[in-house]
Amino acid sequence: MKERPQTVWLVATGALTNIALLFAVHPDLVNHIKGLSIMGGAIGGGFTDAPMGKIGGEGERFGNWTPFAEFNIYCDPEAAASIFSNADLAEKTTLIPLDLTHQFLATASIRNMLLHGHRRKDTTNSVEINKPSRVRRLFQEILVYFAQTYKDVFGLVEGPPLHDPLAVAAAFAPNVFDDLDGERFSVSVVTDGQHVSQGHPESQTNQCGRTVITKLDHGEPGVRIPRAVAADVVWHFLDMSLDRVPNG
Image (cartoon, rainbow, N blue to C red; front, side, top):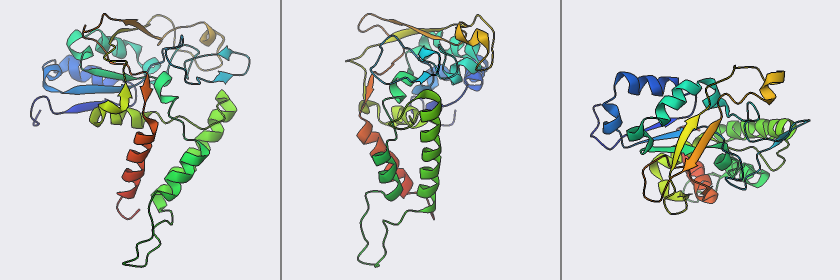
């Protein structure tokens, strides 16, 4: 509230419980913020051509927790539904679903680039700055772990998708995303059904947490859901960010 109106973005990279509560208690904040970026949801139905993955015996799916639901939305579908049903908030919201993040895969070449960076030798100080920093090595280890996990669990062999960086990028670099000249959507969330663990028989039919969208007429305000991202630009953002970690 101390910041000037229309300057602050909220970025949600987990369950939306706290975000929904914030706007329920302080509804005036809807008009105060500039935007809300949410990493969450899964559309399916060919919304993009991203590989969504498969789990043995299930066939094609678009959710990452159940065949229908992405984890962040599934955790608190009522909270998500309250956000998307707020018309004033919805038109300030960018949704980054799995259909988009699965275009942003940390392939082996990307992982190598992030480990070493694009830097060259500092001839002034004779320091070999291409040597991986501690934070780059840690990032590499995390990506290698998830690369194996996504290969084993979802059959994604190219590399793991990175989800949260895209939600952050949407706040400060909206032009790296393609929304087909201003596509906007109304979004609803299935709140019926039980929360069950992965592998539970009902998880194959239970649609609780499913994200359902309807395309709006051109120019009608609604949620922005990009269909593509300039991945090389966002990888460059990440590389620069890793460079700036103090004592990395």
